[in-house]
Length: 232
Image (tube, rainbow, N blue to C red; front, side):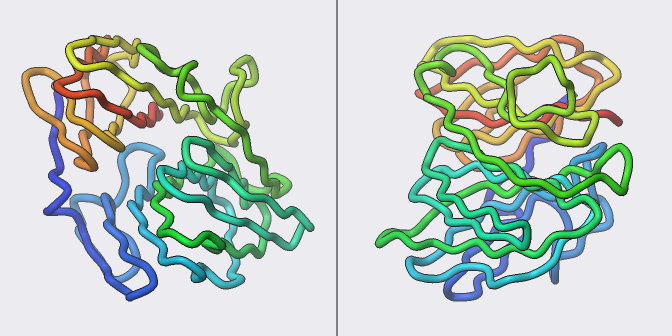
């Protein structure tokens, strides 16, 4: 089963320096029907103006995955980590027992990113941060695991019963993913448009997927998609 959540019907907040769309309840956007999807708590579609960003602020007991679509984001935190994550790459911050961090767009162009929050399976782990490059060529026609709570996956680690995956799909091409009937999926095309179970999911729409053993995705255009596979 699939429920399409159109981009133009998502929660919206325009702060000037930050233009944000919310797939789930967040900050001043509240929808009791969209509090979470399994362990997936937040999926924000952010555009950050050049020379601006999120000042230092705290997080605790949350797995925060940032998928940069355009531009780059510069991270600093209370553990002493500093790093710049470019378009197509991913960073993961496990907030654990507590961490302070800032995220800024130090570029001359707007940065666009997906910020994904996943609730950890257990609380109280040591906080951490990491980033990794994921060449788009490796994702051509197949899903690549970007972040995972499973030790055998070659991906950035998270403390959750979940995976974050990405794929680039050529027009007319079909890719499959073994989700599992007892799992939940949430898919967003960063670019392009795809068809799932006869329904069209366009650029930056959300698709909430349930009761699906094998997920079959057909590209209506050249597309780049991000998928969260999570426990119920």
